[in-house]
Length: 460
Image (cartoon, rainbow, N blue to C red; front, side, top):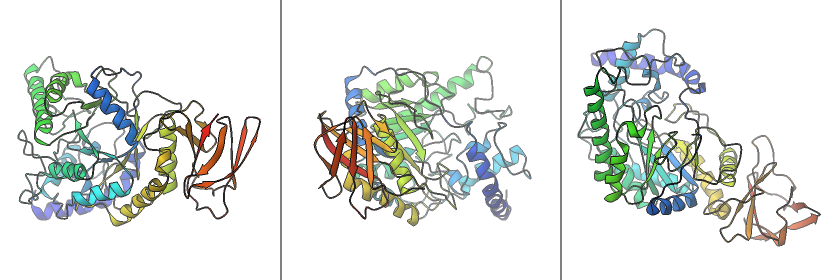
């Protein structure tokens, strides 16, 4: 396609896709559910790293790629499944070729990973997961095994063309635990979606028993890319594998992990998400929170807007909403990773930075009730969520203010009876507390800001 034709088509599709975006985002077909069981790892180094990760509680999951250019749902609109909506004016193949062509215009000339890392640190986040490759196969790292990457296009001459390298280093410099996201399916690779056949759905588009050589080449391709990430991009804490319709053991994950953990990736946490077994070291319910407390490692991955990637006109969750979700998740035994999508220029938008800082401002004051806590049996009543200090004596009560409400004058719960003072963490103020039988009523000071309230107290 000529440049003028491409620009014309691109402009039209940006407008058209703004219309279909909401439809695609409302579907649940691409959302990963929680796996049915959990198998504790046996590697002591992995267990130690898991315990450290469980202390962090709050992280960021960053999707950035070709889908960021027009601001559409990540990858999925090139998959030919009946729940997906695309502009009616385009054939499926025409749309797919348009999408691949975004690699010729993705040029994030303002790319600033230090700005990303500072924004997430200011938000109170303590671990990160960066998408090195989504299902569309476009790599945000300079892979030796494909030219379909940020390092082979308009951005190729930029000193930071190997973008993932600089993202990971920026977050390491800020003290984050580091996670590497990688999609096992790759819709651009001819050994997964072979051009000889149509592409009917998210799976490989051929029968493996009819083309065993293709599948072996795909297995090797995937192993090679994982091995280069694990050897060329520094120390990782987490390998976060998406695309649960392809199991890790189908692409030789065990051998990749053995090699990585015997080298510089000792204690590497593997998340072969939704694939219950020894390589799903923590579970990852997506856009949901379990309805009960779970005392094995898990993480809710939830978007800040209605998309994992960047949108031109985002509808952000409120600060109170994010903090309320975080309190609930931590009280139930999990960690929360918030989805944030950098812009096509390579920045976290200014208004998003400001919203993230509001979250961090609260956590800097009240983080004692979140970070490095563990669960307590009586963990929830109404809008109040309870966490526990590792000493086993101190509990925290976090009142999560719903968006439509104001901070109440009193907070009441049953059980979790205080022994001595109840302290408002913000200002270290002792509060008037009444105990009648099993009921506790705490009176808050006048003029409280309309944000979650964190209390601490020892228990009898």
